[in-house]
Amino acid sequence: MAVDVVVVGGGLVGLTTALLVRRAGAGSVAVVEARRLGEGTTGGTTGKVTSQHGLVYAQMIDRHGEDHARMYAEANQAGVELVATLTGEYGIDCDLTRAPALAYTRDPGRRRTVEEEAAAAGRLGLPASLVESVDLPFEVEAAVRFGNQLHFHAGRYVAGLAAALSAAGVAVFEHTRVLDVEEHRDGTARVRTAAATVRANHVVMATLLPIGTIGGYFAKTRPTRSFGLAARLRGPAPQEMTISVDSPTRSTRPWLDPGPNGLIVVGNGHDTGTEQDTQAMGEDLEQWTRSTFDVDSVDYRWSSQDYTTADHVPYIGRSPMNDRILVATGFKKWGLSSGGAAALILGDLIAGHDSPWLPVFDATRIGDAKAVGQLIKDNLKVGADLDRLRSHHGRDLAPGHDGVIDVDGDTVGAYRDEAGGLHAVRLACTHLGCRLCWNAAETSWDCACHGSRFDIDGNILNGPAVEALPTVNLSP
Image 1 (spheres, helix red, strand yellow):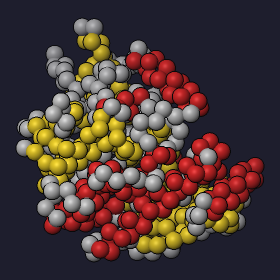
Image 2 (image 1 turned 90 degrees about the vertical axis):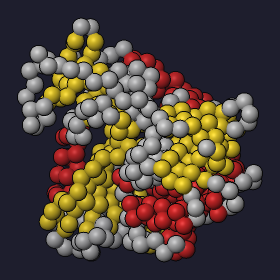
Image 3 (image 1 turned 135 degrees about the vertical axis):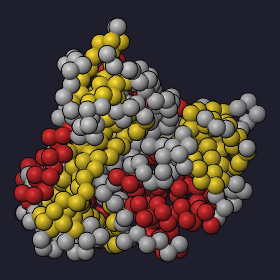
């Protein structure tokens, strides 16, 4: 099978890129998704589509210069407007709503930082202003307000994009895991799945993190997870989108499904695969929500993952030494706006055009001295994680508990489900052999090195791993 463009990954970035390149004249386009469309990080976002990314623009000017900061600002604002445009053009019913987005502090010591951010963002042409009140049930010291931003139901938006792709003749393959992507000596790329190998002129890796070792991005980014919940309040919910710049992060937006009383809250970000009490983190977010708002019920709870680069700017463009393989990764939890920007940039590159924003996102960049230093620090930590495994109790597990067991010199992770069934897997990540840690909140085995995650039976929940964990029979 041969096509012009293969897009690997069926979230917002992948589907938007596929639609744009098809509209630009690509003869044949295919989307390949390991699970279901939108089931990954896109489906687990807050649904905020905004160029307001916390406190980023003043730091970006200091670190990268005003020209690059302006590119970042323009690209993300274009990503916001792309969502609005596509929603209108295709009549997508996704509760798209215009609202301001605010980043606030309650700490008087951080007021000047917020003031500097508002001034920097305004200088870059963004709809920014400094305010001293936020639509929340407590006082704040200061906030940066971005007007005319968006929020939506991400799952319904993805469904709308999928319908548009179908109408445009784009082939979509769900439940099809890509095992390998490589350039071929004939100048094309090969995409290999368990069932077939597809030849393409261009391959877009839109899989949160490129699979395997493509581009070395596994060593240039760090994985983090955050918790989310959707609550019904007894009275009207705040109608602004907000995020705290203080720690721990608290991010809110209106949830329109139940009407004016719905609220989505996200926070308690943490490194993936570290030995933390993830269950307590989820409970803490709910406790904060209940103590801050008049909560009637919490209807949904979830967690989601993303990656951050050393210089806090996504990698978008051609992968190093791979003209046919393009990537988009490291969105730092702002992928609904940066993802739209990525689709615009990648679409230009595939069409043979230059993108005015590419210099700041260049996927082949090494980074400044600070970024290089952070990469060295992160990879030293990864090296230590490769050699360390936690000890735990043995085979005698109570229902709902995990354990790490030595079986003939091999380290095995076990979990006994509530029905008494025992599930055991080998604990070396199939990506690069790093240790795995138990995630009690999500009953999964998570990799601290590069963010791969596996369920209790070893099936892949998150890449970059492409192979399941081997299972172990612990029956007497």
